[in-house]
Image (cartoon, rainbow, N blue to C red; front, side):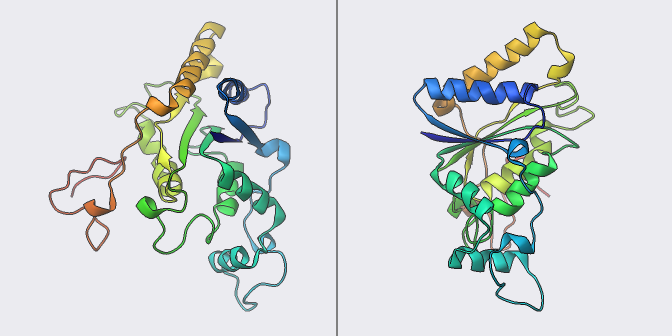
Length: 246
């Protein structure tokens, strides 16, 4: 299996760094090919815009990122740094997104990676989303750390259910583009734990990586559960993330 780890943390000795290193070690030992995109080390530019296109734009009167991404993918004029990451993603069977939860989401550098790399014409097109997504057959997982406890991210916790917090990534980025998605592995507040507890969290991550094939995927409603208005059909019980019946 070809694995891509998209890693977003500025400090190599962080717990995120330890999780990334452990994933490389564990997966390589099991015979998988692993590549890492270390976004901070790469100096990744997170800002999507006109410079993402090499050469003249298809329209000069008004810039549309989606339109220019589509044309660039057709012409082969997407910027070289984006093309390099797209090549890694194309090759990957399994993608790990490793990051600290900052302000209830991923760091800006990782969001910018997604903005630029998941370009229209590469990651999605009309009629190519969710069940028919362009990355259908690929597997993804979020591996993250938090600054607060698992209780704060419980369904009745002050920060809200961690699956609800991560829904925009799980559904809006990964499932939207066709990925099968594993439940996230979240190391809760490692900076406030002792070494034994941090080692326990790392061991849990190792065990999860060793059991990837046996781990049930997150549930997302299939296309047939939705009506022509793309809302759940009457009688279908909402089961995905933060969806609910109304």
